[in-house]
Image (cartoon, rainbow, N blue to C red):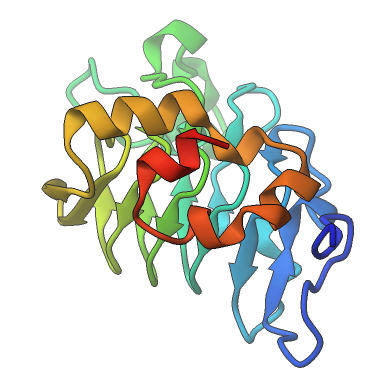
Length: 209
C-alpha cells in the first residue's frame, strides 16, 4: 500500500478539519512539504490567513517541511511587521502620506531576519507563534501557545514565552542518526512498509531499513 495521496486536500474521510495545505496554498513565497497538515475546524484550507505581514516586495519565504502537524491557530509573523528601530520613534509615519512619506525608511533601515524555516516531522501546538526568521529543526515539538523567538534544535521540545528547550526527545548521538536516516525523504511506498518502525522507538531497526 502506498498510503494516502499527498495531493488530496483532506487526507481522511470524516476529518474535514484536517487539510494537506500544500494543495491549498497559492502564495509562491509559502512552500509546504508533502503530507504537512493544518488542523482547524474553521476553514483549514485557508492556512494563509495565519501568515501575517507577508508582503511580496520584501521577498521573505515561509518554508515548512514534510509530515508536519500544525494545530489550530498557529501563526507566523513575517518580516513585513518590522518597524525602523534606529530612530527615536518607531511609529511608521510614512504609511499615512500627506507629507509624512518624506521619512520613508530605506530597505536597509528595516530589520530583516530572513526566511522562516520549519523542518520535517515537526509538531506545532495550539496557537504557537513564530517570529520572523526563526529556524526549527527536524522532529521538534513546539508546545501550545509558545512564542518562538529563536532557533529550535532538531528533536527538541520547546515551550513558553519566549520558547525555551524543555528537553530533547533523544540523545545527541541518536538525533544525528535520525537526521541521517531522514525517513521523511523515503518514497511513500517505503514509508508505508515501515510505519511500525517509524512510529516505534527502535532507531537501530529503523536504520537497518
